[in-house]
Image (cartoon, rainbow, N blue to C red; front, side, top):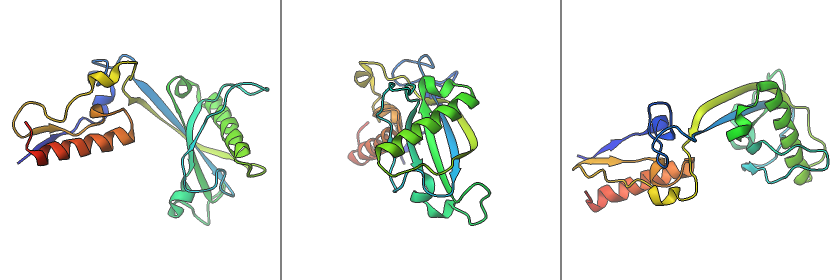
Length: 192
């Protein structure tokens, strides 16, 4: 029977863990997600909005890499009795932006979300109420130029032991899914 070796957060470069591309925690990136409540969907649609703006015209450089109105994707997250509004938005900063203090991060995230909405031409932004800031200090392992050449294989060279991990592709949710698919394919192919 094949055994999968989970790597979880330790593979993302947590202290004592080993990142895929740098051999450890050096260069690991943290993330911080600011959650906002609103009376209507701040960023309409069931999609992840990517921040592609730049500093200029009185705007600081963006810190949010992506945002999503969670209640547009999963309406069950909305409640009729919500104190600050029925919609919940998550805006995530990765790397340096995630290291900002809560007050600055919330202010900058709100500015970025407003810019995203304006770019979508959805009219005035509804009132946003910050409800939480969640931080993951070791969200991604470092992926400097050349990291692709150092990806780990699914096979660990020991019969029946496989790695299903983002380290086989990229440090992301997509990378984790692809790493799992690569491990499954290797198991089915009978590779060692």
